[in-house]
Image 1 (cartoon, helix red, strand yellow):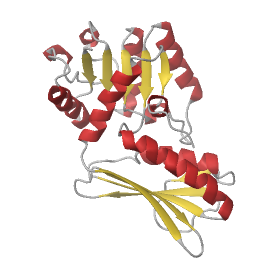
Image 2: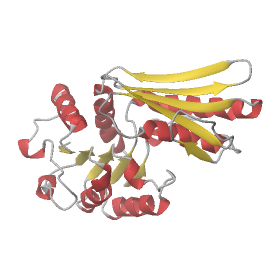
Image 3: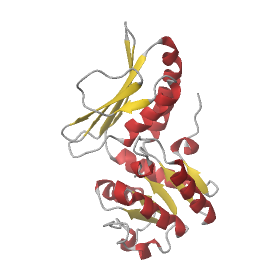
Image 4: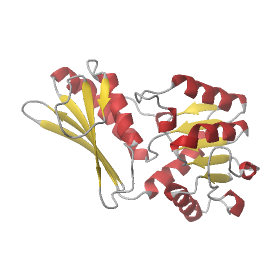
Length: 255
């Protein structure tokens, strides 16, 4: 397999380091950390002879970049996630369907995930199973996430947890991403973010009754886990037919 790394930020550089450690190939310098300036200004010619593009770019250019990669018939492993969300944080199904059709029409594969750590796939399913039980036992739920001080937005992983909880708590209808002050509405699931130091990433799903509390935690020790997971996803999805896949399709689990 020959890779392009699309995006020259922290994660793009980490993917480059992990590919070199794995010695999967001798990387062509032209294919390393293709810098995205904006959706109309990048070295698209660098996708020649490439099997897979691993994409970590800004939300603003994510949609156009992914479309152009798929039109080249190149598999896209995409860690940029919020570009396909509506203002209310729900998925834009029309956009995802368009990208899926592009992948199929151009005989390639698309994987999108807010978190490529393999253990997070199990974490999400544990949260789903717990919510399915505890929502019927009058336990409330909330989400806490911690990251390094440079991260500005609420994490895609936290939003995915929120999506799972909304699916299992039938009487919850929205995510509360606001400040930590004030009363939360009964129909909302709270997401609270902490930014400090160089925290790689920690996500806690909290279930609370009047008498006890249950916490489910995933803690990343190094950002290398996200890069390794993206590379592994690229390898696993090559066994699949052209189309659109999520992490759960690559690491089958069910509850």
